[in-house]
Amino acid sequence: MHVPDGFLDAPTSVTTGVVAVAAVGVSLVKARNELDDKTAPMAGLVAAFIFAVQMINFPVASGTSGHLMGGALAAVLVGPWTGILCLSVVLLVQCLLFADGGITALGTNITLMGLATVVVGWLVFKGLQLVMPKRLSLTALQAGIGAFVSVPVAALLFVALYAMGGTADIPLDTLTTAMVGVHVLIGVGEGVITFLAVGAILAVRPDLVYGARPILERRQLEIRTSSTTGASA
Amino acid sequence: MKTVSTRWVVAGVAVVALVLAGVISFYASADPDGLTKVSQDKGFAHTETDHGAKDSPFAGYATKDVDNERLSGGLAGVIGVVVVLVLGTGLVYVVRRRKPAEPAANDERDREPVS
Image (tube, rainbow over all chains, first blue to last red; front, side):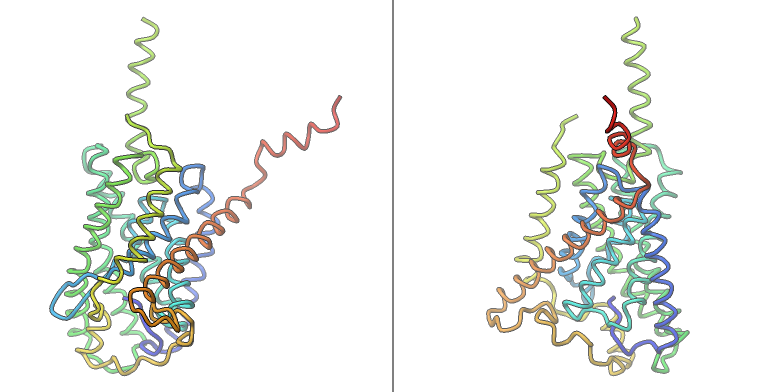
């Protein structure tokens, strides 16, 4: 969904540029609380992994492909603020080195894929974690659902930006239908990849999954209680 | 619970990323992505303007002057993974360094002249 130069007019691009700069600025401060000895070595790696997976376009419908955005994945693995930083690095490198995503559209792309997918993916993930049974095995599923939802929401946000400052006169209802339709399908791929990637890390080192910490802490508390009573007996 | 060291997890993810970008990316779908396809179908693809970085040696995930398609794309992918890894890790390092003075570092400085 990398937006190229020219799709959106200058005022809209400036607006999303300001949003992106603000988001990255706040994230630089807030990420400090997420980055500890466990998430820090993972963060750069998660960015590199997302870059790699974004190169793998998968077919979704006749003559159409899609690829991972990775916002939910990054948020669940290293935390949402660090996730925004990860995606911003990926989008910056793609834009400047690979001419993927316009330079004037960098703010738009960070807003759509760096900010929106992270925020939506994380909120859905946390919401599900709150209401579902507190089991570690559900973490990957919750991450996958968050990822699935994040993609059509980002597509809707693009339509909103296009309504604000699209450079061509396209009927919004058909644009909405087309964008959401294809991005629901891409979202399925996003969900599956996120489920598999989070599941793989959970299987070997659940403590390295930032989003699984509340569940792990609960579990450790329970274990500690039983072991101390065992020791004192 | 089985424990795999962080080092091994990091190495494993790095290898997967390099293989995906360097090798598997060749087999990725070449069809336009969701937004590009919609812009073609709905008739606003022509509003796209020239990319400012179109002369980058890796523009379009191909390495300039490397004719072999597999090698050209694979090289661009591997370089991309390394660049993102270095920038991302560097950024994390800077963000953590700016953390208000860590107690351990303070202790060392404070105790210096004693005895």
